[in-house]
Image 1: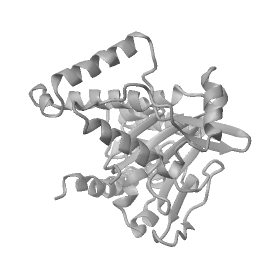
Image 2: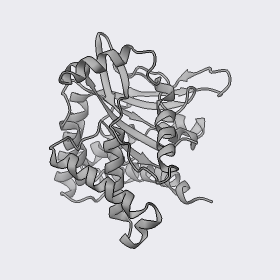
Image 3: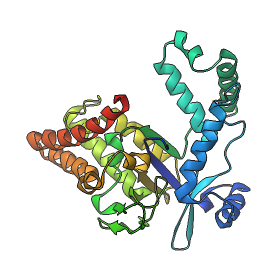
Image 4: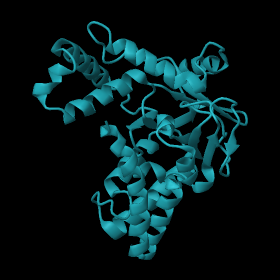
Length: 305
């Protein structure tokens, strides 16, 4: 059972990586031994389960992952490193912040968490990056994640799970590359866009939200300013010729074909923001409420019996 999670990924041109990483990633992309895209999530998940069932458990890999997602557009090779070790550290920090200290030993022995914290501290003290190429959201997709994309960049692939027949139910953007991703070979919903467009949409949305709603995180009419600002900072840390991908990932296993066909979350977010800019408050509220209600029902499945 794969995680019920969605992913926001940045693929940088291989030329953006310094040597020797550039040469290593170029060779990796040509290797037949690397995990193929449709199986990549299963490979990473299997490795994580093995670490957690070990005695004692290992909350993060001993070394950083040498795997990546690969995309090609024309003659350009794009790389999105998994960064599993860094993402594990960051996930642990978020978990620790939300969990009472007295309950932490129930999830991992103090000697295990202590070692992880020391390793992460050494990483930070060495000035290494704290910006992963992949953001993960379980059981839902944050509304801010829909902002970088246009509705024409939507790619939906549906199949019956046995024959492998697929249908494309949306127009494809220049970089969409409509094909199976990490969740399944027959059912996928993704958006792909170029970095300049993604940054521009986030900047414009942040301007609109701040003008109309201020700097808070009031999300009754649009994604909050704080979340948009955080997303903008993350995108700004990558090469300007990168690609940005929103992958519904394992969430497609929670949603039937009819739900996926009807999902227009990116378009609804754009309409809500445009209405907010024009001062059409009722339309902005109605459109954003429809978006929130749809994802609230999905997120409620986390606590379903």
